[in-house]
Image 1 (cartoon, helix red, strand yellow):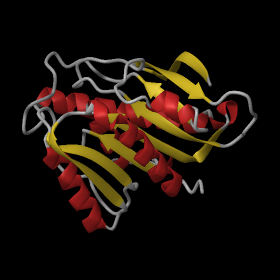
Image 2: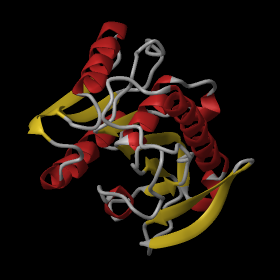
Image 3: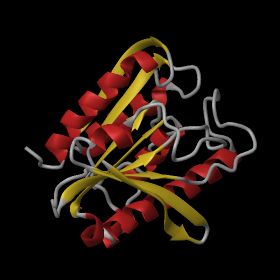
Length: 232
């Protein structure tokens, strides 16, 4: 695996990503994933994630862009039934960052051996909320993804969900103390009504990005992406 660190994917405001790639071959069209870390929209960075998506998927043949995004909220956006207005603003900004990262991967596909038709997005906690926003808010082909994964995330409101959205995989604890389980369950129901492929993996009990389920997150995400990106 090779890692190109500190690549600029957005200039105004300045946003950076680390690009993880398989090493030792010359594959020209690899599937790609934008990975979004957690942190309540107030903390975290592209080098610190609970779920090791960048390493795991780069070693499995993917190109993975672990991104920085808007984390400027003064107080963490957690433990509330709905996002505060400052958190909604940060979410909107983070979604715009995620869309720009998708555009960057597609625009630079030739340079980094990426298949621009097989780009997905995934994230944990606030990153999972962001991934859900990117997956359900496509504004053009350049910012659209083929699939998205939300771990302990979901959406506070499903008004953006429609039949044009990308297939989704969501993981959520039924008693998450930080992000309501309903945010994932409501998205699943809305996507099903819209006729979009979706799977919700409900984890019984209290927890938020539970460490004892990390292997499950990675393995089930790998199976999901293999199907939705037509990699079989």
